[in-house]
Length: 231
Image 1: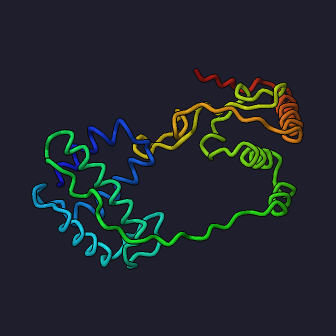
Image 2: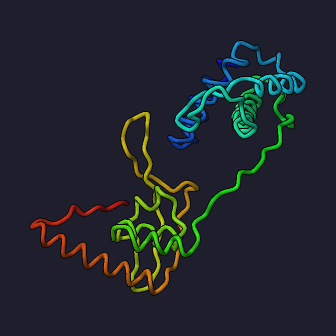
Image 3: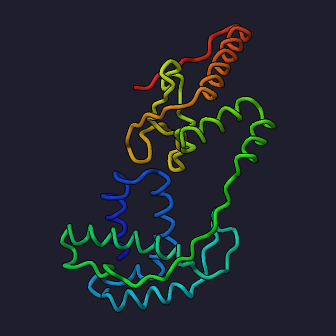
C-alpha cells in the first residue's frame, strides 16, 4: 500500500490537485493511512478487511495539526471520510493501472457525520462591521458578499476585471499560497471556470470612490503604482 500511495501521489496528486489539497492529502496519508495499512499487500485488502480497519481507526487518537489543536481525541467520522476519499481514489487508479482487479474501498461502510451548525453574520452585523473597519477592508467585504467571492479570488481581483460601466466583474483567477515552494501563486479558480457577476449601484459607487482614492494616493506618492497584468 505504501508503494501504491507513493506512485499515486506522483502520477495523480501532483498533476491533478491544488497545492492545498496536495498538502492536506499528504497529511492524511502520512499520519493515518501509512501507519494503519502501509505494510499491507494490495491483495490483502477486501471489503471485510476495510470495514475492520476503519473500525480500528475510529478508536485511534486524532493527530494534532494546525487545524486540530487538541490532540488525544478520537478520530472523527469527518476525518475518516476524508481518508476514505483518498483511498477510494487511489485504488480506482490502481484498477486503471492494473495493479488490482477491483477496488476494495468501493461501498465501504462509513460512519454518519453530524453536520456542524455554522454561524453566519446577520445583515445588521455586516452593516456594523463595514461601518467600523478601514475603507479598504470595507471594500473587500462588500465585494465578497456582493459577488460571493472566495478569499483567493478576492485577492487576485484587479481593476481589469471590473467593468464599472456595465456594473459587472469577471472572476478569472485565484491567489493561493504554495507551502511546498514557499511562495504565493496566481492561477485558475478552484473549479477552473471563468464567471461574470453583476453588482448593484451601491457597490458601483463604492468602487468608483475606491478608484478615485487610489488615483489620489498614486499622485501623492510621486510615482505610479506598479501595473499588474495577467494573461
